[in-house]
Structures are given as C-alpha cells and as structure tokens.
Image (cartoon, rainbow, N blue to C red):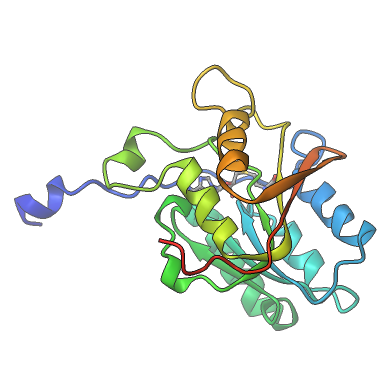
Length: 208
Ligand SMILES: C[S@@+](CC[C@H](N)C(=O)[O-])C[C@H]1O[C@@H](n2cnc3c(N)ncnc32)[C@H](O)[C@@H]1O
C-alpha cells in the first residue's frame, strides 16, 4: 500500500453485533408497535441502526404491513446477517434493504423521499474518527433526512438513548436545533419514542 493510501483515514465502523434486546433498548420494538398503532402500511421508511437482528425490516416485510425499509448499519457483522437473511428470505428482501456504511456519509443524490425516518441512535457513535474524513454532523444528517421526508411524514427519536441528554453533543440539543431550523412539529412521546411530523407542502429537495 502506498504511503498516501495508508495515511488516508479509515471508516469509523462499528466492530460489534447488537442482537435484539428490547428490555435494554426498546426502540425498534416500539417502532413496529407505533406503525401498527397508526396502521401504517405500504410506506417508505429510513431506519438508522438495524442491529444484527433486523427486527424492523423483518416485521415491516410481513404481508399485512408491506412497509419498505432502507436500513443502515456501520457493523460488518450486522450486514453479514442481512446478507444471510436476504438469501434465505427473498420475501423479506422484496421490502427490506440494508446499506453498510456511515450514516454521516449519506449522499443526498442516492436518497429517495421517505414517509418515515428513524434516528434512534443520533449522537451515539459520531466523533473525531468521523471528522477525520469530513463526515456530516448529527444536525446535518438530521436536516438531510428531513429534506428527504414527504410533507406530513414523521421523524422518530429515542430519548432512552445514552446520548439523549448527556453533557456534550446531546441528541436532545441536536433535536432542539433541528426543530428551530426545519418546519417540523413535535407530536409527542409514544412509549420510548419521541415523534415529530414534517409540516409544509413540498419536499424541500431543492434546498442546498
Ligand atoms: C446499539 S445498536 C441498536 C440496534 C437496533 N436499533 C436496536 O435498538 O436493537 C446501534 C446500531 O447503530 C448502528 N450504527 C452505529 N453507528 C452508525 C453509523 N455511523 N452509521 C450507520 N449505522 C450506525 C450500528 O451498526 C447498530 O446497528
């Protein structure tokens, strides 16, 4: 490898595997219940942090839900279980795709318009290693995904996250700043989740 290549900062990936532990981290389970409570069907969902269990994708793909989910994971091990799932369950793959990568590197040209965006793990995993390759901030990624949300669509956060109200770079502060910048309204808490709705009559996709 050339000296130039070896000095290039590597991706800040997650060298871990998160199995389904709803007692500890109820966000994915509550999200599926929220979808059912609102009878959300045939929708397009962006899901930050799939876990290795892919609960949201598998549940959303059920014939009685048919919600299309684009998930993202920064853990190679979790992406491996998605590949296995896709091979075993084409019925799930029809509705569920998972991108391996860093959410802070999302490219707006590759994003469709979503009905719902989940940002349960905002501020949990971003730091200097992401700065090293010029990744977006938590606020920038929240704004970007809001721009790709249809008017009337929902963004859901997880106040149970350890990053929600910590001293520095808290998700709560990012959400406050975002709510001041974007045309969104707080709907309120639903179980472990905090729900916002995008107002407005256009998708704002043309904003820089
Ligand atoms: C603690 S696990 C929670 C998984 C699942 N939402 C749950 O509650 O069971 C955190 C998830 O966030 C993902 N993640 C962490 N940093 C990320 C990043 N920068 N971009 C995309 N996904 C990331 C991890 O790969 C993992 O799937």
